[in-house]
Image (cartoon, rainbow, N blue to C red):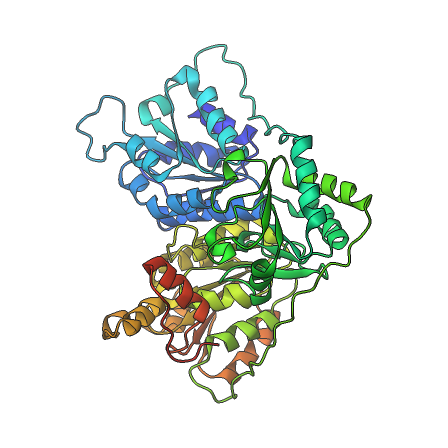
Length: 545
């Protein structure tokens, strides 16, 4: 236990998100006694792991969580699966029941459980392997391989280190990515030179701090820049930026990809959700440090294995010698939508998103949950930096965003975080409002409340079935928030949205807005996505704005 504590300190751990139980109470108490690591006590194990996920996403450092054995670990399932899908740098310290205690009431096969999620499983083998085992999980997450779980039988965890054990050495930083093959670079240059309608698609494989060569390459090619949803905000101020591609992005970006005769994919998987079903109309040049990413979703004519940002700089330099191109500009999208009248009730979800977007500062920190309401927020809530934006539907689960935003608030201490979630999402994670209040976090909680489960309502209606079972008369959400000690405001008409900037300017701690949105408004993009998941054609009824 002392050895694991020392390793956590040596790894630079600043916060552990935890729910205490018999298996980890000694460890957490020792950690607290160091005075070096802050403990954040969640209300549920799912919340603790989601908080660590949020911390990792917004800090760029490993997010550490700890739960007890048995049900403590089993309760983490959805958050752990979400973190795996997001390749999030989460370290979960999960004690196991004592070795050989076959009758322990909380005993179950934790190894099979953890591995079924796709997370790395590393047991704490023996007291003399504590350093190697702990280092392995931190090395795994630092190398960008996703979550890792240190599974520690309590008898091994509590055992003393053997005498003369050397001090713990922090996990090494990952090595630099491979240098691109010159022949592959030559082929990429030839493809880009021949293109008349090139488009660049950028993903999270290009760090924001290294993205300048991509913008310079776009200027040389005269190429529009599009991004994946995970890279939302990357190069957003560049004049050639069209924003996020795919159904949950901007229409111009998707149309540019469809019209391109050459797509340069930089550090993105180019999955069907980003490409609206695949890149099938032009030459694909794919650059990624991971060779396995090539051809996973769209067949690349040219595959360049190498660091995406560095390779972009090489391509920029090679193409600079040939001179800038005229390039092309996709047609601008006409925006014919007008805001609703002030007395419109309930509020159209797009009006709510537009008002929130106008009220938030440019340097906003944003977390958006999953669900039908989220399609409006993901499409039009702006971001200028992917390090300050996260969505939480990586595993397709709702109810993750509140806890992820709590982790974000600790990662960006002192900055206000805005989380947008549905009423069903909030009810799944309602207990964590107590965590928000306990720590007085500067968190803006925007609840898009349509009185039930929106996508299920639309899906039932499209199938000609009654929608009754998808609708729920929740208790008053604003009143619930006030019961937790959080200031709350109900918004029932479009005119009420005017309070957003005033309240946000005044509040320094948590605040909740219960926005009653029109349950019949349907976003065509989400209908398309739902239809693709069902393998059928979309059916859209009502307002498609």
